[in-house]
Structures are given as C-alpha cells and as structure tokens.
Image 1 (cartoon, protein in one colour):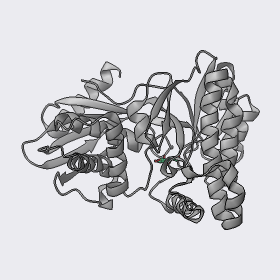
Image 2 (cartoon, helix red, strand yellow):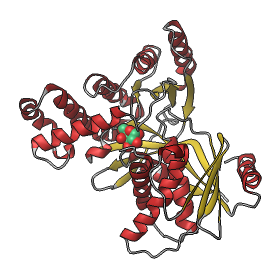
Image 3 (cartoon, protein in one colour):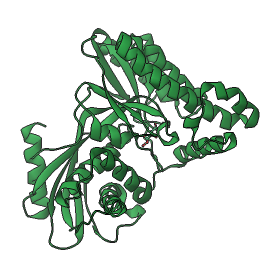
Image 4 (cartoon, rainbow, N blue to C red):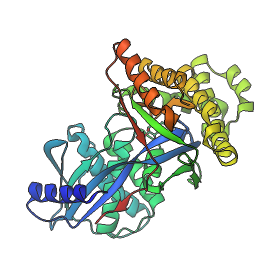
Length: 390
Ligand code: GLA
C-alpha cells in the first residue's frame, strides 16, 4: 500500500471520529480464474486475490456502539455490537456489521470467550463495486481480520473466511459460497488459490502469467450485478433440487458419468444447471493440472468452455459479457470468460502483453458500436491476502 493511502485512511478516520485509529487492516478483492457457481455445491474453485484493496482504519470504543463511515458515502451507520441483525437500510454497512456479528457467532460455536467492545471504523477502497471482483469480501475480510486481533478471538484465516460468508449470508442476506473470502484471506503474490469447497483444503498454485508474457485483463461491463437479487438464489435452488433428485448431498457427489442418468430423471432446465456445475468442477481440476504441466498459455480453451457453459447451461451471462469475451478472443486473448456471480459484472481475458492494447481498444470500440455503456478495462495481478497495514 502506498504510504499516501495509509496516511489518507488514518487522517480520514480522524476527521470522521475526532480521534486516532489504533490500526489499519486491509483485504483484497478477488478475480475467479475458473470454477463458477461451484463453491456452494461443495466443488472446486480457482480464484486469486487482486491488487485492489479495501482498507479499514479502526479504534475500539469504551461502550458497545459500532460506527462505520467511508470515503465513498457521507453516511455514518451505527449499531450496537450485541444486537446486530439483518436490516436492509444498512446498505454497505451490512458487510462490516455482518463480520462483527459472525465473528461473535463463530467464537461462541468454538467455545472461545470474548468480550467484544464497540468500535469506530473508516473504510477506503479501490475495489470496483458491482464488477464481480468481490468488493464485499474485501470489506468483510478487512473488518473480520481487525476484530480477530482487537477482540483477541484467535481464528485462523480459513475460519475468518467462514466468518465473512456467515455474515454475508445472515446479515446481508446474500446466499453466497466460500470462494471470495477464501481468496481474499489466502491469496499470495503471483499465485492462485485452488480450493476444495468441501474439505476447505487450499493449494497455492503458481500462475506464471508474467513469466509467459501474459496479463489478465478485467473488462468491467458496468452492468451492475447484485447477488441479493433473485438470479443467484434461483440458480442455487436448482442445484439443490438436482442434488436431491440424484440422491446426493451436493452436486459434488456427481461426476460427468452420472449426467446421462440425471438427464433421464430431471426436467431440462434443472439438468442444464447440473451439467454446468458438474462439468465446471472437471474444468477447474483440469485447469490446475494443465497450468502445472504446460503453463498458462495452455489453459485458454478451458476458460472459454467455462464461459460457454455459463452462457448456455447456467444462463447467467448477458450480451455485454458475451461481446467482451468474443471480441477479446478475436483480437488476441488466449482465453476469456465472464467471472463472478454473473448477470453483469466483469469478464476476464488472459492476454499476451503485446496484445493488451489491441484487445482493450477493440472491446471499447465494439461496445460503442453496439450502444453499450463504455467498459472499464484494466490489468490485475495476483496480490497478497488480508493483512495488518499499520
Ligand atoms: C459470487 C459468490 C461466490 C460464488 C460466485 C460464483 O461471487 O459470492 O460465493 O458463488 O458468485 O462462482
């Protein structure tokens, strides 16, 4: 983090609350290389933490009040540390409140005695919101990491990932999986996080993009997606129905060999949802294998196959994402797909460095020709996970 940003978040805290922060904690957004809508089906994902972060400057209080403020809105939201509940009027503050609630729940479930105090918190972030890059996980994880230290809870990064997910599910009300928080907490420079969402076993895998002359472009379509809206939840419900029909606890219990039987037993829509998840799990495992054996230039076809599956079977893409993917591939990207929850947000394009400008200009021109909002296109690299900054 540049010193100037650290100075800014501390002085903004002082302006907002009239006292000095006791520390600054940060956590990154994430991009998912492959493995979409597999996490809540206990499958595989392969995301990495990105070099866009959320910073939380925090100081404890002597009472039980929590106050949160940020550089992106003038509102100060507040609640009592012992009576946090779901309340849609909290807006973005539901994420830090959710982390504060969930860490207490996690401590209780593990028999850890804590005496939580209230706190003041100021947030700054350069993770784009609504782009499918998990600004939400960055926010939850920065706050969860801070409270883990300030309240002396002693949870591991894997447990803190569960804290973030619990807060998001119960207090924000988004039925999301464990991928985003895991990437934000476990990420490392130039590495991907290959996570088994059933066992929560994580392998840190070398990406090797720079070594092979590649960069990962993010094409933010500016079509805002919201995970609390219905599309995400209905996809999740279809997966649960599919698992139930097949008599397995989750779709992780199925392999490609089970698909013909699934096709016989369920309606076409449920079948296609199931086929996406089952085939996507295979693609994640294959991507990690190919990456390790042959390097990143060999994974392009798998990325595109994932996009086709999301477009045709899971039906979570939109025209802007399809245009971004097809245009990037036509102009030199070696692989591209939509990333994140879908219904908007961003596409990724794994692109040789000497093609970055051609791909960016062509996608921008194509969007303009089709009358779409101008996309935001930038490169990300794999960055370290959540940490204390000062
Ligand atoms: C969102 C959720 C994740 C995951 C992805 C889809 O990012 O927060 O848990 O389900 O969508 O892969």
